[in-house]
Length: 457
Image (tube, rainbow, N blue to C red; front, top):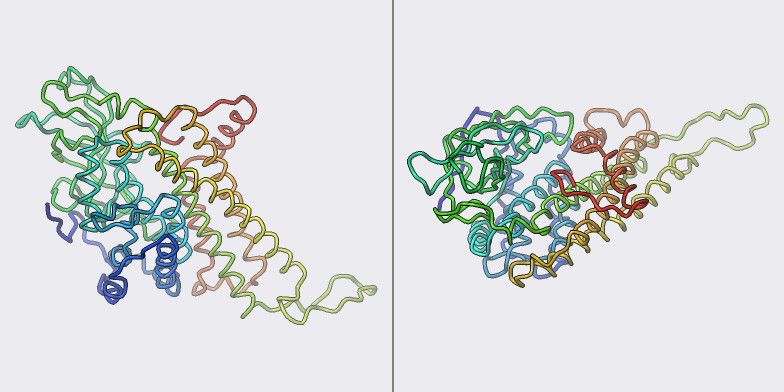
């Protein structure tokens, strides 16, 4: 299977992949342990951070940035070593997402979505499908995007009238993060309620990978124009008559006599782990963005913020104005408070990261025990992740807003770019209302209820 380097659809200005060409050889050797992988993510962030504000203004399709991720090896951090991957647990992958997001929130988000979609076959697929897609994605260092926005109408799946071994996807998606710059795209749709599928019936969902650039029926609008996360190329796509072999329908019996979901694959709680896994992806790049905002603010304060020259205490005021900004009481207090809150948030997120890593180590296709994961176990980890997301959302929005209070009016200069952190967080924290996460955790605390798995829990 081959993958071309162009994308169907509207011509759109793109960043030049050659600008990061030096890192292909510089990072040609993959890290050998977890610490090395996290350092590699920090190295990527160090490359991205210096011109992040200018790059965001230019707002070009991030082909160069995806190339940088490929050079780094981070796209295959979860992949098996036998195929050239890092074979790291999710706990390390989550930290890598967070570190990259410190350099550029958009690129941290792209990495996170890729890792989720690349790993999806391990949650939804049969052993043979897992082997096929894991080997392909890892060995060819492919970047994976997705067309899986649950709030849009589903892509409609019908039988191929010319070939009973294939299905056809049709429809559109409003959000398709990273798909326009991907090698593979994860499509998700629901079977037509027509009589085409008498055994499976209408409405059943199917996930399937397709090569992005070899299908003329995949057209991207390049219309992503949000206030934040501007380099994620998350605009809409039209899916027209995209044909997929039945054997690539993840977790389905592809035999011509049945063509139905396999109950031991898709009918067990393990198959619903896609949602809490991606919610923790969100939480980690939120945390990276918030940490970067405080760090950049602190750097600016040390170098450029001026102390306030006046006091407001009247004639009895005996304290002199601070000689430098780093002596200002309110500045020290604000940085101290937010640093403490971010440390607490990080501890909670790391706990959730470790829990997910341990879960996938304990239950997987190699052990043959995916069906043993209980709904209670799934619910408990979902609530831990929900709690982490609540905390990071609250702390992150507070930090990225308050940092202006301790840097001064000149920090609002466009060239500084301090506003991008708040815009990035505000954009994605609206993905699904955090109020529902609060309610969900509240029912867990008060009533001991685990959430019913949905597209957002």
